[in-house]
Length: 280
Image (cartoon, rainbow, N blue to C red; front, top):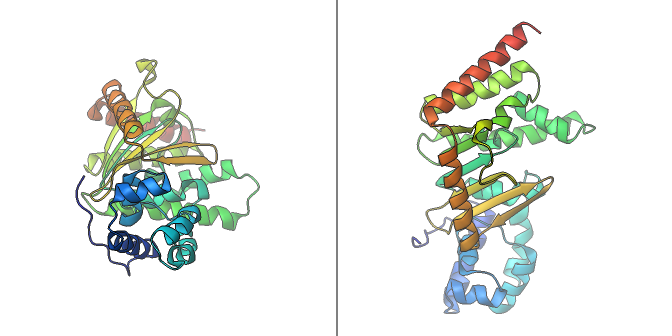
């Protein structure tokens, strides 16, 4: 794994905590693995805390203050680093996503959040929270759209998405919203900003029948995978698990339509939605 980068402690509370953790660990003469053993976590988990990829949880902060003799520093500051505009079950993954150099995602039901348009995202959140006030929905949509700023950089992160055919066939919002959403994904692919594939129904059984999958790679930390269910999500760093999920994604790539054929299908389905909007 590449050596850790020097963090700018002023860039964010998490960067500040990560920089202090690295300093305190090295002052004690402990490796990441040795410190991880005392917390019953992996050395790569410690590396992710130090790089700012993962947030500091209170249970670890309390133990680190004891192990590293930091006079309550981590306990005092972990709450600040944990504040997030994202739903709790997804917050850590969204924040890791912002630091990733490569993201590979298989979407089973929905267009991935990074690629959602405003109308599509609003329809998703309204379906999740049918009685929520409009201000709450607006805040969730704004946070989701803010994530897409990652794509403003023409090269980083590398984003490779595989959309199950169910994603493009299930109408979210009205026909106009679906056409716009699919056109947006297709345009990003045509502009060479993302790689997009569609896993067709004709592929039959495949390697990720049980759910969606997201993999993230970093310059200065071990890779992570993220799995999600209704209002729950798990960010995983176990090397064997991440390697297995990486193989799963490779199998999905092999089963999916090639990028060009996928693009043709995306645009064809978008056109069908456009016709539906014109002739309800």
